[in-house]
Image 1 (cartoon, rainbow, N blue to C red):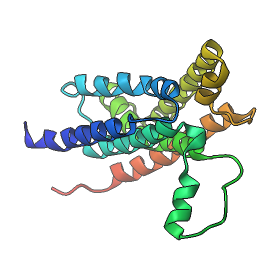
Image 2 (image 1 turned 90 degrees about the vertical axis):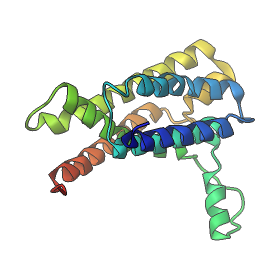
Image 3 (image 1 turned 90 degrees about the horizontal axis):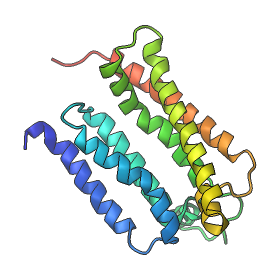
Image 4 (image 1 turned 120 degrees about the vertical axis):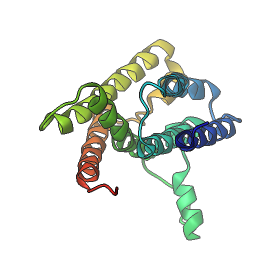
Length: 207
């Protein structure tokens, strides 16, 4: 293994360990399986394409963080991730049972835009070489389009499976504008990510 390959390989091994850990006794096994379809397709695709398109260590780190967040959501189901309990435990507070909507899915949709954007930026820069404003717009549009596709997949899955499984996978929690808010947050994350990538690209590199 070349020295330049060690960091991505370490991230891959760490993610496999996290995946196996969170695969043990998920809250709803069928929902976990549905949530992991994208992982079982996406991660092997990254491995197969590694030699033809190697992303930066920064992009791989961002993808790793996003996938871990996604696996946490898949383990508990997004609407039941006990993040508020974790915050109470860290703060040593006892405010009783948390109430209101569980916003963990909102966090992950924003994180999708923010953390997938670096890989999208590098992919488009390598394959399309956009110039001018398009260098900033194309990665954002790329992430936004995939956010729309994912919401359509959620809708189709809910229609096909129906019942508790469809409701758990859709995760609207009674919000009729859930899909629109999710896409808006992914777009906002992508815009923030593009701004950070632009600053990173403008930073003078060390020799």
